[in-house]
Length: 436
Ligand SMILES: Cc1cc2nc3c(=O)[nH]c(=O)nc-3n(C[C@H](O)[C@H](O)[C@H](O)COP(=O)(O)O)c2cc1C
Image 1 (cartoon, rainbow, N blue to C red):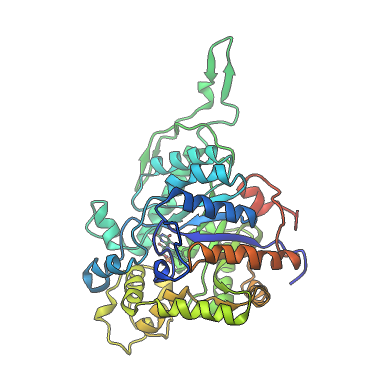
Image 2 (tube, rainbow, N blue to C red; image 1 turned 180 degrees about the vertical axis):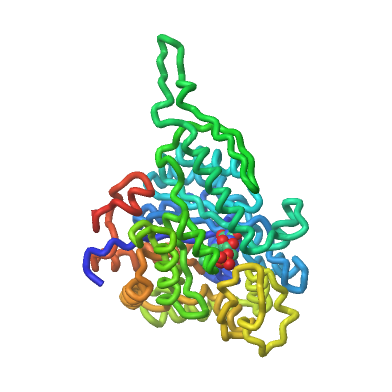
């Protein structure tokens, strides 16, 4: 890799006591004097990320709890497995004021939310953030989510993506339903907007029907930055067609290089070039001032993982009750309807992979800032990536660690901006020259 590489950085959270690694809430360094239920906690995180010049704060989300394991919600509640789970969208207008450059990624499901509601919401957020909003398009994966929305079960995997394709069409039409110059504001004539420049969409498709126009004027970015994380063949086909940013994790069946090759092939099949999409890899850095300090932090993470809680998390993502699986069966032997990429080709057993996931996934990096950035450089090359999605552990101190220790080392090596350039998120992701 060359100097003056412009890496992108996002931080993944959910509005929860324990976002992505198991037992985060009980780590000795977590929630000292604050709580994830306090607005001030989120303001502090947003300010920290702004200080570190992050591209965005990204909120993963779903509308349920992980209750597939033993077909019961008890363990998810008992151990706070990505639970409780509040609505992150409500945080965005507030945080965008305390962090005036930071972008915000928010998850919305094409399986449950009507497209008109979603399109309106995102356009409103794009106005309020002055063009810093991104939408993480998910098709969702769990039965209990479906049941919260009045369905008996989640629609079948590939059908969800067929629905999502049409959903994107509807949203794109709604976001274009106001011409850019529709607002006239002619005070003398008393005309606010030109009705010939605001259009119905009259969409009537296989899954959705919407008349339009959207009741929100054209937003600063025109539409949100589109993020997607599907990793199955059908999911990649969808991402390649619609995404600006692909959030990737190494798949069991071949690691980063193979997954990147699959993304490239899907982009080619969709008639898009690799420059049209930014690929952001998930990593979990555990950083210390010394190697020994970093290792001690990692030991604390491992000591806090309740094995049953780990299985709850994995069962939830697979939409499969892993308590029914014999201990020695590799995950590749089961057929799942949830996040298929977590099981396909996976030679580990449920317990082994659940532990890995509970610690923060396949790219756990423990060490000093120098060691972490060395590893990031290697992963950047290996995955032909454009940046990283940072997974947290102690909250919010692991975010402080990254911003105070790792970001300066990235800047020193010319891999990351030291001040913001572009104001809007899409421009920042695509049009900034290195180290602007
Ligand atoms: C890294 C990663 C992050 C994801 N984040 C979310 C999320 O926040 N909310 C959600 O409902 N689904 C999430 N998903 C699930 C996907 O959106 C998708 O529904 C699921 O992966 C099934 O599609 P696939 O088989 O194509 O991967 C995520 C998946 C991956 C691999």
